[in-house]
Amino acid sequence: MFPFAAALEERWRDVLGEFEGIRDALIPWHERKLCEQGWQVFAIYGFPQGEAIAEHVARCPVTASLVREQIPTHGAAGFSVLAPGAHILPHRGFQGDFLRCHLGLIVPEGNCALRIESETRPWQAGRVIIFDDRYEHEAWNRTAAERVVLLVDFVP
Image 1: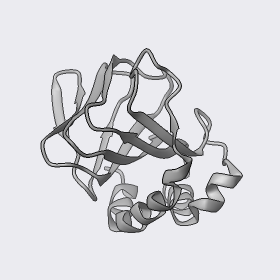
Image 2: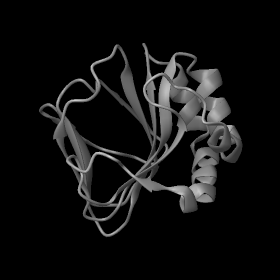
Image 3: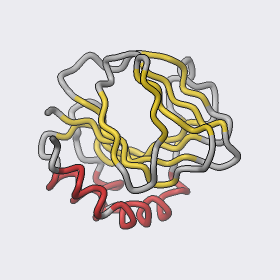
Image 4: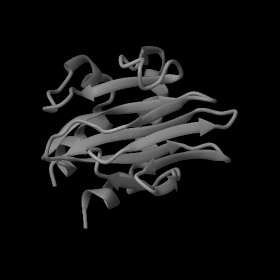
């Protein structure tokens, strides 16, 4: 349904390689009411309109190009990291006309998943999950290792 998903999945190892190069620049997610600790991010394109963050685009040129070229209707895009034991509480996202894409980059074995309404899905390294952020959802990592995804908002 979304042709860009195959392109992201094909290049996921390149995206992972760029993530490894920006670990030092991760910052805590600002909404502490959703996750007290253990959720870090690195934005490449800003929220919600997808404005390029020049310094971050320069650090992740392959990922930035992949998003820009494959998903021309993208909004925010960047890396999202859940530390071991982190839990993003149930919430509804931004009420815009977009969907959210997660490309699994580092996914630990065990209880690490995303729940949207009544459906729960584990992430898989190299695979895309697309969902509507406006529905209630939550995420958790009840493992001993971190979970990393590339998160991209887009207008379908």
